[in-house]
Image (cartoon, rainbow, N blue to C red; front, side):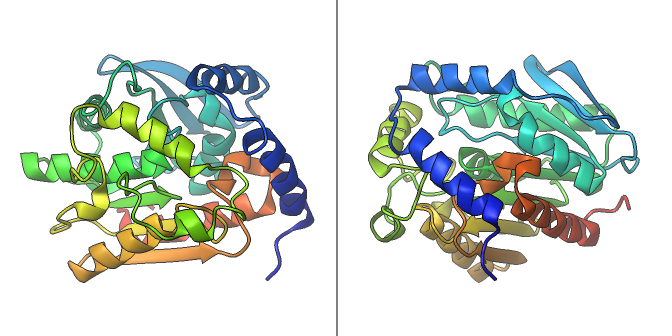
Length: 299
């Protein structure tokens, strides 16, 4: 099925904003802060600030949310940018579609805080949610881009520490290979309207720090996936991280995990970030909702 006219329009705009105007980390952070000010909270949703184990976070609470169902969403931004405010445009309609409360924490970023700071923060905020009395059977960990990789790293760390695991994981265009072995970095370099591999390499170097990039908590394609909960992976066909998603699905499935991979034709890196501006975002959220209805207890 061809993409919508809205998607065609925004694909052109996004290419001009991201591919043709390369910014520094500081520039990306400033643009993110500026655009987040344009977000307006819709009726029927409450957004509140909360201190989640020391991390500034936002609770997104639709009025019709299902009691007990929680989404912990880890934002993208290459481990160097992004935050709670920058992801409201995506996470508010996501929470509305899923009829779930969604917690959006601001984990520490590189280069100021390299690995393992982000993983430690993700683990601690999950434990904070459990301490509020929520059942792990009703918690979904989701993440986009770097947040997708971080969600997988957090579950690894929680499993190895003996913590109760979430009901499922949702990865939107996940960055899972900071060793850059995927051929899509070459084959999708031109179609991708958002990402430049040399920029990703720079960001990866800041995050990896003194560790090796094939560390399984940095590049989850090298992880051991035993005892993992079900995973849903969504990825666009026109992004350099396409192979990151495919390799993740193949590795986890080979190790016995219930994996669902959907590749969306002609779409780009984390297209649901445009929220209500794209009909394809709504469809992606509905697919996530169907997946969660199967795997989460609260319905």
